[in-house]
Length: 97
Image 1 (cartoon, rainbow, N blue to C red):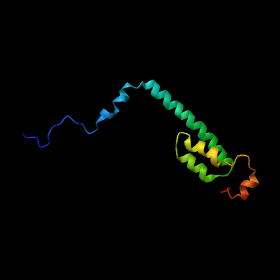
Image 2 (image 1 turned 90 degrees about the vertical axis):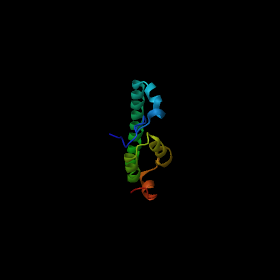
Image 3 (image 1 turned 135 degrees about the vertical axis):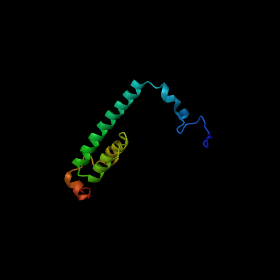
Image 4 (image 1 turned 120 degrees about the horizontal axis):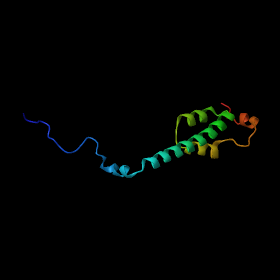
């Protein structure tokens, strides 16, 4: 019987570019993942608490849905969180959604 499809040694997925993954310690990788999860959860918790406290529903939903390992949350806390403002000032500025 004649093969119509030539046999090659190439596979569908060529993993040669990811050969460094074989040298990584799995316990180190697990540790890094755990640290990133705790880091992200801590920042997300604080930022969501401030967004809810200041009635910023758009920011709350955005930070709840998008996971950026704490980057969006830190940006919100440093730039967009109305820290030190009274509730009346927030309502006057139109930030109450």
